[in-house]
Length: 390
Ligand code: TGC
Ligand code: FAD
Image 1: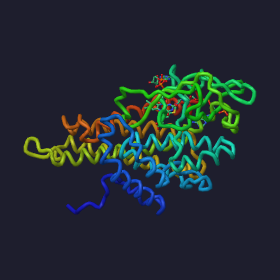
Image 2: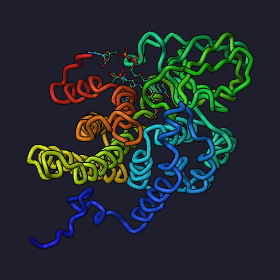
Image 3: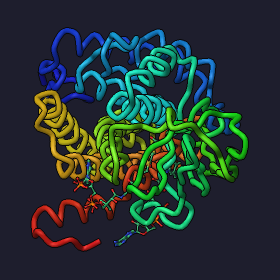
Image 4: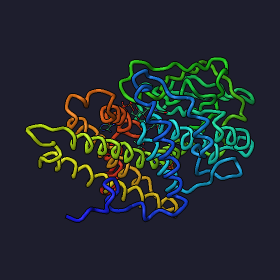
């Protein structure tokens, strides 16, 4: 048999469809993940800590707010490059990709898209440099899938606003210097920048997580928190504000789990070639090959889906329903692959010495946050039928 020239983790040569700049971004972030993330991430997950030391390095590489314009200190890359950043970071760990997603798509993006020029100049360069960390408060304790039922309020008081309420499951909450907080006002939902240390504002870390352990997740509490009108994002009102941010972040999340799935396929392939049972490597059995082949098939589909989504986004044609379909498909793909890879590793698969269980546990969050699988299925169902089934 002739030696194959196919890359087992890119069977359709998606790489050849990237521009030189996009390929360079992928290589650079891949090196960062190999050299800086993979050696430490198992330990971080075990200990339940986010590796804050990596923040300046991520900033240096232009990974924070990578798609925003250079005039605000950002890298001005395209959407495909942002996707590749997410993919390579999540090959390391979903928690590292989450950090970048929240900073870039959920905090820097709304300041850029909905903020005043003063707000952009005040915050974006420092956020791109990793000196100011942000978090995004939309979800509330009584139910995240239905953000229209928002109970956090902001009431005008002269030139200020008074915020009361609570947000739950907030990534970067206790790391953050600023929170982009969505609150119900008399004129509809609006966004506010709430700075750490503002009286009445408390972030409380959520412990006992079995998923995204190398990521900070918090509750945010607002008790008569006074912020000036200058901290309100002036250019959007209504649910479309936060949902517009989610579209940006969900787009990146379609790419991220491809990285996690590739890491799991690689681990399962290598392990199965060296694990000898019944006098042959388990990779020589049909059932293991079927499983590995199925993983490669699903990864290939996801790679092509995200690349086309990225091309649509760069052409200004991407629709939220397309993002929902890809988020649903790609996270489900990665979660199934991580569980299957864990099984191929047998008992060894239950330890964090190997990556599949860590990815599987992380992906249990990824399939829930940024819209649960059901939410995205119902978005696609609504598109097909014209009937809202929420
Ligand atoms: P509906 O009331 O019909 O629409 C309200 C307005 O929003 C517009 N819109 C969107 N705009 C941009 N992107 C989208 N994806 C949009 N979806 C809707 C819509 O056109 C309308 O505009 P207008 O001008 O008419 O007012 O709302 P809906 O029925 O479409 O929404 C229902 C539903 C269930 C889809 C929505 O509520 C939803 O997506 N729920 C899930 C909530 C969610 O995903 N939360 C995530 C919180 S953040 C997070 O999880 C971060 S984890 C990050 C990490 O660590 O990586
Ligand atoms: P619920 O909305 O209570 O859903 C419970 C179940 O009901 C789910 O299975 C759901 O699919 C199902 N369901 C909902 N509606 C329907 C329906 N109409 N029909 C059938 N079934 C339905 N939020 C932020 O704002 N910022 C963050 O930074 C952030 N980071 C997160 C980090 C982590 C680790 C996690 C786990 C969550 C994070 N979230 C964040 C919150 C996340 O977005 C929510 O968990 C998610 O939107 C789901 O909300 P919920 O947990 O309240 O579940």
